[in-house]
Image 1: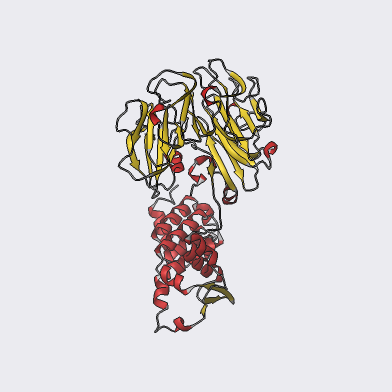
Image 2: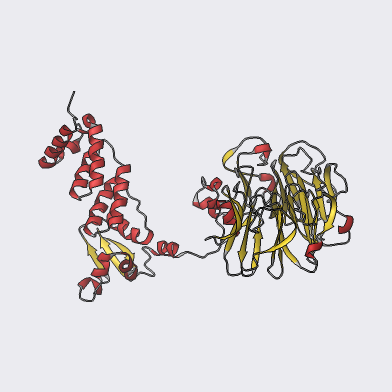
Length: 531
């Protein structure tokens, strides 16, 4: 399942915010902007706000999410972005909204004024229900539920499909040879456009200098033209990169054509292809292909779930499909694309499924499922014998048939405090420790007694972070007592660096004579008492 945290722009958000995300799209020339939709159908934006692409009504960037109240409650079904950037967003009701860069009328409102906030695109779309949107660099497309294709914006290469190279200020139906046909999918390259019909045919128009239209030549097309090379095949999915295209048939065959400067066609070389070429013939059936107009990266997923990538991958040119460890094509773009944008609107299928780690954490101190209790300071902590035996050698030894503890339902603990022992048991369920430095000393004692070296290191880390002038000498004494050499050296240096203040604390004068004498000798050898 896709994970939005693989995109750095979401790293400032907490677990609760992240868990509310249902759909997301990262975009921008440096992947520094994002729009996401929550489970309550609220639309939020975050990032740099180039060309007012966040739609917040101003030009202010934001490192924290901002809600677009205008789109509140809208059920979003499709989102796409251009290079300006400009944003198109379609709702379940078929409404189309646009905002951001508008230097070429790509917002479809008849002007070239920048769109600082979402506006409803209605020109020539009245009574039309938009189901899918696609953006090129500076042109836009929309698909309706009746299979009509509309295009507008920058048209220097014919990418609007109007038969001319004049910019198109409002949505215009792409007709010509698509007039009586039903389109089911649309995609855009930087300055090219492609559509898949209900019969599996593919049509392309716009810039074709690298052969990205797959027509067998490199001439631009001002109106839609059928890809004859795919005759007899039923194309199920099509995607476009910056200047290359990929098509997947209903039989799982993958075809590639167009620019190949970075090996994005996966042919084993860097030669452009003017016509669709069958690739990955030796691999198993392909079930998904991925590319987007912002990158030169390609990816696909096979029937067994294997994910391959090729093209420009973090500056390297991968000319043949490379097997990755990823489980979804989205991760390829998060980790290897330049920029690390999303190739489609990402959907998170949140359900009630818990991982093993999450399940263990949830069951800690749960009396309903526990089969053992520890009693510490008169308080009970509910645990599971099997988990303790799996996670800790001490308990593996304790719960043997010849030990008395193996037969008990409640075990009394008197050598450690309740917060310390509870934290220890919780660590066995979660691998995490949350204690103040003073209690961490007690946990360090326990970890030493139970030979839990990793827990010992965690305790030392907590203590280091919490050291102060007031507690420094007490912590030093604890480090010596529990044979924590690294922590001892850290505390000693802290005490020497703050010698005057530390020697004035109560802890310094309450320490036993041998330790005090040893400290003074060590500090003297370090030159701490020199004027």
